[in-house]
Image (cartoon, rainbow, N blue to C red; front, side, top):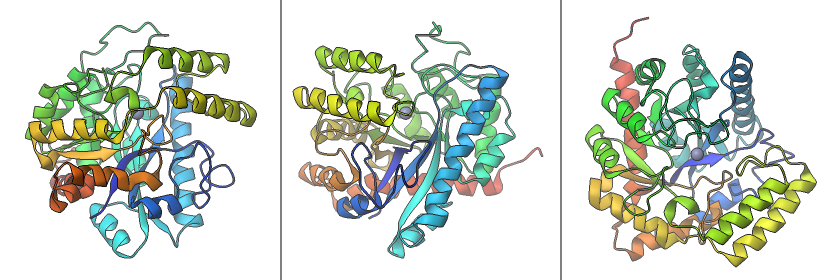
Length: 378
Ligand SMILES: [Zn+2]
């Protein structure tokens, strides 16, 4: 069995001294020793950026930030920890690296804002190691509508009514390159557009299901059914607010804390070291008063998805370092608890192997195979 987590965020200063993969530190949820302890084999490390201004300067900044993160990940995998981890570019790489006793890292991208309006960048991202590409984050961009329009920007529910014409070209190019298309954070119409256009299976890299808990970020039954027909996989995410209703008092206390520190959402990247420490201490107080959802909540979403679309189309993700983590699976060392819950719920070893990584690797292989035979215009 290969345990794959398709969504682990990294900060811009990923790598030592700020984030040493060999030295577990508070507020950082994935390290090599904790992966070994908990049995997590493959984190997808994410080239993420928030949705910024859709101006020439805003787009250029996003592209520059994307390359900063690629470089940080590649430094960690290619130069600093080469005896422990290795970057995987294919599903076969993942199997070979795990077979050799090391851990494998795959790169995913979150928010197509990083390419601005220049589709040629997709080739460069792919060459730098990206193996999945999410169209949007919170707020619409030049490619697609988001599940969560920006409130500060007063965005309407839909801007393009799904994918923009450029977003549609992006689906075709992703298929040609062998990059998995990711519908997490996409609006329902965007997700259905991607599913209708993609010639290869797609993923939802970190989403849960609307029928268990009605949240804008969760997938509807209609999207789940289309995902099954497409042959894709939904990676159910251990993100507390998507799993169940968070107590209102907790939401208010968290928002008040973030406001005092001038934060945008849960983004800690702009905090000074002192502010970060204050934030983490106060968040720990808030968490102890109102604990997060547990592994059983996560398993409820997995159960529902398995019943609805079958065990071949369901996987797992954490969103660690990006607000993810729940009671019982709050860092890589606790990964075994998710496996134990699945065993407790009667899943067989074969089913658990599919959910923990087999399905994702199958999709990755099919995406690679399609790219080899895809028609190309240039
Ligand atoms: Zn996300």
